[in-house]
Length: 170
Image (cartoon, rainbow, N blue to C red; front, top):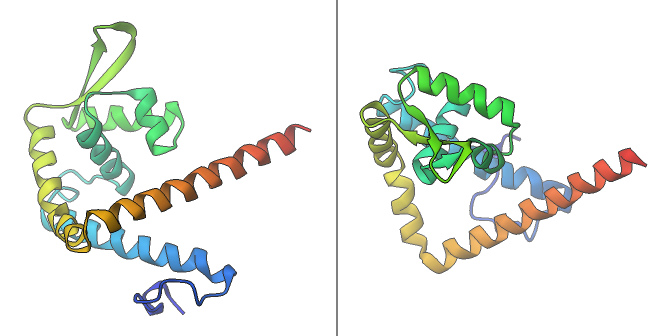
């Protein structure tokens, strides 16, 4: 059974506990596939051969700009070195710019470039408009509940990872 075969109308309450992660992953995969197709239709990835991870990073910069490299790495749950490498590639493609933080000269802030970065941000907004419409259709309360639930799952996963690290150190 593939993720697409899972009934989308099920709330997951009737599933065996071991199937719940797969049901969640199937839904995430469906949303991500939709977003990737929309991004491709707007020419965001094809014009510059952006990888899915670079597209995700660009999305984070659109959402958080200006953002420090360390905050971006933390948001994406990747290492600082990986974030820096990805940002270098995005800067070379003309999507982002690095600036010294005027309040803390040790920090580097990332912003969208005024031309290519801003154009990509507009294309990303167009690509995500159907998703935004779908979210609006379910209502703000349902969407807020979804975010709270996902944040709780992420926090528990993080706690589990932290415990694994403690167990390895013992």
